[in-house]
Amino acid sequence: MFDELFDEFGSVSSQGFVPTHPSENRPAATLLSQFSLIKVTGPDSERFLQGQLTCDASALTSNNWLAGACCTAKGRMVANFILVKTPDGFLLRLPRVQADVLMTHLKKYIVFFKSTLSLATDLYLVGIINPEDTAAADASFHVLEDGYQLTWADGRQEFWGSKNSSEKRLNGNLCAESAWLLADITHGWMWVQAEATEAWVPQYIGWQHQHGISFSKGCYTGQEIIARLQYLGKSKKNLYRISTETDLPAVMSEIQNNGKTIGELASRCGKHGLAVVNSHDESFNAEMSGQAVVLDKVFYTEE
Image 1: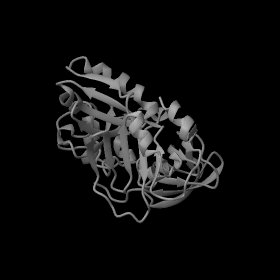
Image 2: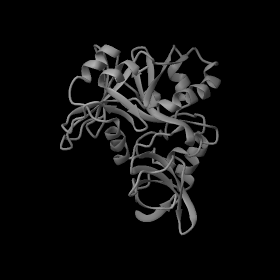
Image 3: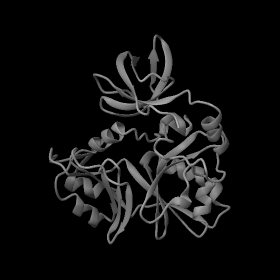
Image 4: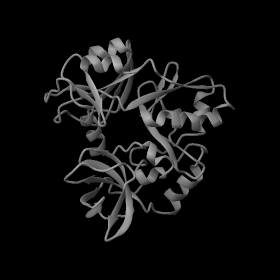
């Protein structure tokens, strides 16, 4: 759906959008080509989502957003996302490669509700990266005259709108989408990729620290497993930032320590990424695909 935009502003590589004329200045915009939106509409939409998602959809207003995940009965994530409420229903923002996967999964349950699922193909996603010295922002969501604006606590912003309104936001300083992906890695935002479908429970990626799990809402698919891990056990796996001297290999590549597999690569952007690792150490060295890697734990406290 982005072909027309690429011709005018840049192209897409394996790491996302690359502008024809990148700028080092900030703020700068980038096309979020690796993400898409799923639309949920109908009178039963909130009730349907409450029974499937880890987050509390009833806590959404027209001005906030929530992280969330959709899991199997065994508590394994099919996908994770950002959820917002709009005048027409709800939007789930997630990796493009997982949109069809999640829709296929949810369609098994939505037949019992007066709700519909569809890809929001009329909306384009643009990210704005502000200077590093920008003051911390309040995470928020707003309906604009020409689309939607989502603000992250780290100061980044997203605009979701029509082709014309998105082009207006791309007429200025542009940066590569990799800058956005690296910011996700820095702040511990791990998005389930196709290779990792049903690989991990939400706590393995620290989703409780991103407020992506409600432990007070009613039942939902996978809730028993997730709650049991939270209250009766301790997660044996944790999220780590990973870095190396050369570009990281494919997602789900094994990480080894002293010849023993201890985890898998969860996301990557060049030499940096996030990994799900069976460890509680704050920092240590390991190896992957024959090269040395450095691992640093993202979240240090247990909730």
